[in-house]
Length: 146
Image (cartoon, rainbow, N blue to C red; front, top):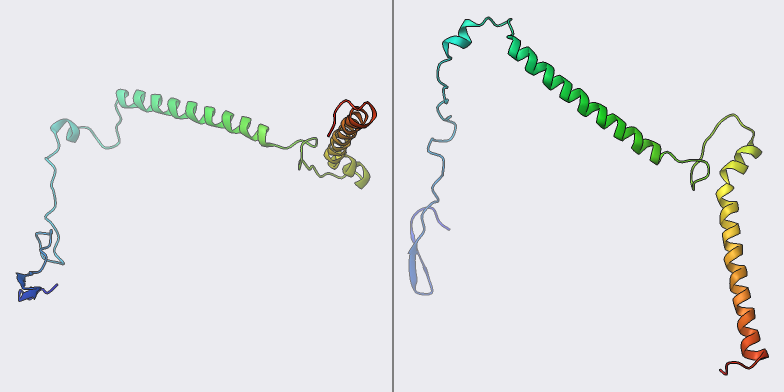
């Protein structure tokens, strides 16, 4: 697009393109005039800067109590979350280190390995029993023909 305002002919149609107008009313580098607020009321100017009214103190106390209550509930929920997340020695990956001898620590740390090996042995034994029962039913008693 040309900003010079010269006509451009495209496929026999002549159009004049002009520069895009800016949305800013002022020229670049100039600021918009400041928005001034109305003058303060007499009641606000009469009160000294260091004085606080009883209503303001009561409101501040209410807000502080509400903030403290929110903090207490947040702390309790965080503590509950941390208690739930904190791993125990029985859970997978629940490792606790102390000055206990290595053999005792290893027995505590690898309790989950022992538990998993028992489960694997139980499932494997159960599968072997099922295969043995199927062998007897199919080949021994000729109950099923394959």
